Length: 230
Image 1 (cartoon, rainbow, N blue to C red):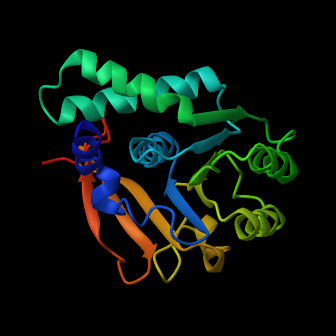
Image 2: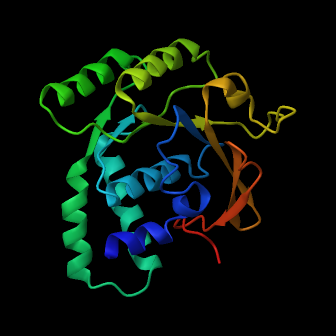
Image 3: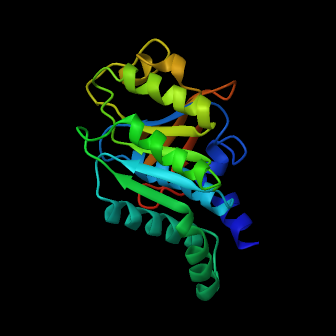
């Protein structure tokens, strides 16, 4: 019951939908630096953990102990958002779901898709359930990322794992005719879903740029917690 309540309160359930998170090939969370890309990606992954799925979080920016703190903070914010929860129940649930998150840290120079492929192969060889999604945080989309994405597309086709990326945009850059940051515009045909986070007054506005017919929907988030703003 607690898992369901937490999923229903997640901003991801409202913005994307729990059944929609892993449908397709690639998804992107875009914003300029410091707005909340990684925090929103963690919320996406957290909904999968609460749905009893495994996830793989790959970071090119932060060490895994820092990423783990982000997951703990996101879980705490979600618990606080639904009102009173027995603290012992909340702790037990966290201890139950957190082992289903596997994290790997790379640098831009050490990251390659073969390492992820080998990791997924080890899951299959051991007859273990594959992750429902992979989060990749920190690829530099200011450079040409086509080769990396094509390799990951093959990985998606082989293992059926949806991949969510962070994409850093820049304040000074104009949007494309479709309203996309230039980083997404260059590779938009490879992406099924895209969410753009931007500061608006004292909130963060999440805009659905790509998701079938669900485009241009907007949601307000609390910048301190990344929860839906009432």
